[in-house]
Amino acid sequence: MSGEPRSGCPINLTLEALGDRWSLLVIRDMMFGRRRHFQLVPLLAHMGAWGRRHTPATPELSIRAQLLEEGGPALWAEFMDELRAAHLGLPQPARGPTVGERLQKAYEAVRDSQGGAAA
Image (cartoon, rainbow, N blue to C red; front, side, top):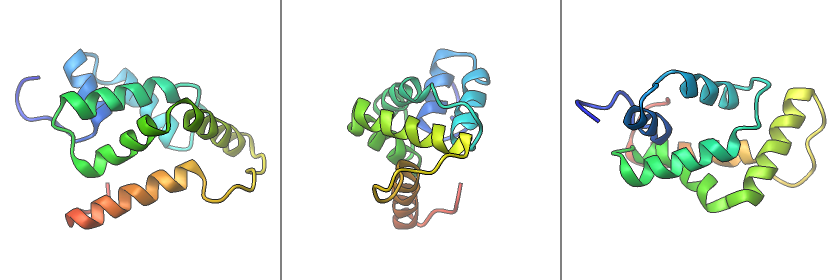
């Protein structure tokens, strides 16, 4: 990478290192932006993990990638089921907080501990 990174997001930093900055960012935003596309969770989890290890990702934007990496395929499957149900208007299984809620809560906790603003 050359120059200052545009974002502390590990997925964005991975794309900056690899090239083609926009296509996968659009896919990332589709997945996390409550759109109907959710089958790329494993790919984005791996990209986030790589970005956390090899780029200057910020802690508040890295926590979700860390939790997805640590949760592995079982968490990814749960997240994909959750996204599928949300996008198709199906009821969520009763199992406590959703993966999305857990990821958001972790982000907010790190952000608040860093004194940052909402992203």
